[in-house]
Image (cartoon, rainbow, N blue to C red; front, side, top):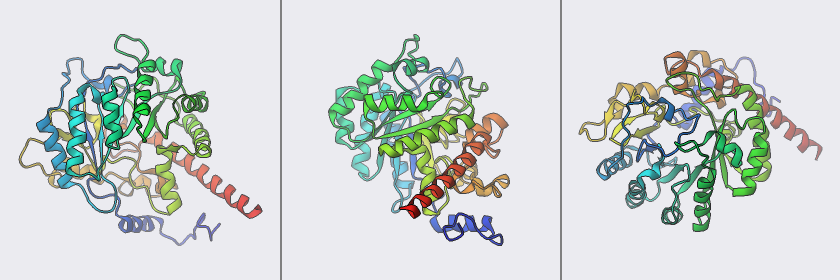
Length: 390
């Protein structure tokens, strides 16, 4: 166990060791992600949506224009880190395809400026046309379509504003992507009370019907108005996700949430942040406001800059400077945690919603990561035993 680095000697200063890893790999510094929001409006009214259910009833949704878009992309290109590590623009919402022309312009303008920047589109699938599907295929776009299981399960939570289910419309969009020859299509899967009990079976159903290349599992977060009523026990959800991950691993299907923790575990590095918001990303709202985290879009808290201002400088902005330091090495309660190497600090938004500060622990992720680490060690040990016997 010692030779395999599964246990270490008592005289090792683990906190110092982890800090040295951070300096060695330097993966916690530099802008590399931009969430681009062509609109903050959505044609769905999903029952569990933390964004939709956080908007004030008097909130006025807006659409991005080309001037704002181009200024935002120019800023990202000029201020993001080049070289090692991939830069990514994530076209998000709301439902981004409500503003199709801006989505089209974002893709074409980015490809002209910097062809190597990765572009992801996260969509509910209902507004995908043949024309948009062909654009995604021709421009090598990764498309994530939101589905929570087979028709009857998805339609329990994911509905139009009039209350009717969305599955058929999302399926039509997905099939257009496949017909156009899109090589990178995944399913964004939200785990909640409607699908947790039979999670593996629901994933199997989606694989049979859609043949996705990847999954991305999402745990629900709360809203500004209080606890999300559709959340489930994180302890129970972790057991279910591990069960599904083992199945997907056998099928050769990538799952993003688990893999972003397994990679540093295998490579003996540290997963310093669980999302890009602490120092690695900006979110460009439809009117040009800039913040670190899309979850704060309804309140605009931490959206302290605007792309149309001449003196936009994230390095000098107190809000962005604070967020850039929000990771486990700077949180005292995390330093003696066994899961610090794979944790990434959980969700700062969820910490703020529940405890009033982004610096508080996201306790549900503490439970998740400790449990997942235990499984990782057991799985690694089991694989060593199998290798020895073979």
